Every structure is written in C-alpha cells, then in structure tokens.
Image 1 (cartoon, helix red, strand yellow):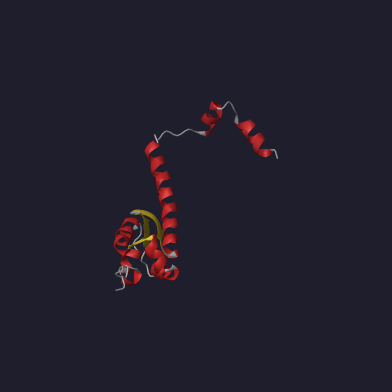
Image 2 (cartoon, rainbow, N blue to C red):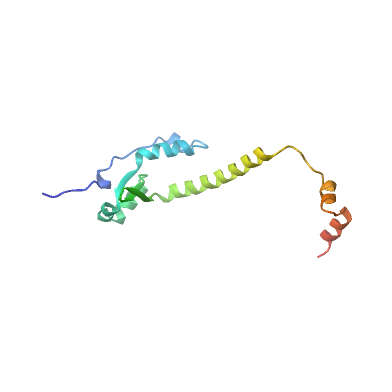
Length: 133
C-alpha cells in the first residue's frame, strides 16, 4: 500500500472576493482570509512536493506554511503578496510616526527667534552661515 502525504494538490483552493483586494486600509481583512488559504506543510512534505509545486501554489494565492518539529519556520508566498506586505509595512511605519508625533505633541510652537536665542545664535549669524559656501 502506498501512503500519500497531504500535499498541495490535495489542499482546498480558497477563492477570495475581489472586493477584499481593493479595500483601502484592508490589512486586517486581507490577513483574515489568508488564514484559510494557508497550507501547513512540514519541511519533509515540502521537499517531496518540490519547488515547482510550492511556487505554483504561491502563484495561485495559497501561502505554504513550512514547519519543523511543529514550529513554523518559513512561509512561501507570491511575489504579489510580498510586494503588498512591503507596501503595508511602509504605510504602517508612516502611521506609527504620525501617531507618535500626535501623542507627544503638546501644541506648543516656538518661533525661529526664540529657537535661535536658545542656541545662542542670531539671525545675522544664521544668514552669514547660510550664505557662505
């Protein structure tokens, strides 16, 4: 009797509505449906499946989660998903900066003359430094 392991060919295909892909700020929505589209696989099973099968699965939108001794060690995802994740990461960095600035902003503003005075400078010194090469 031949024992067949659970491979990508046996994994259910999950179709995602296009609306989810086009919603602005849908990081959470996109990740929620991805949970159902993940294919858990051991390193040994992935090796038997082959790189071609793993790549085909990623291209079809099914992430392959690779585990060793029951612990997730890697994921195979499409280039499109990586590009989305990188874009989302940059957006999240920008959002974190804005939130940090908002949280720490006291609303107090300092005019240029007060700042120059605090550093022991004058407008003339500033202008002469700016004008010199």
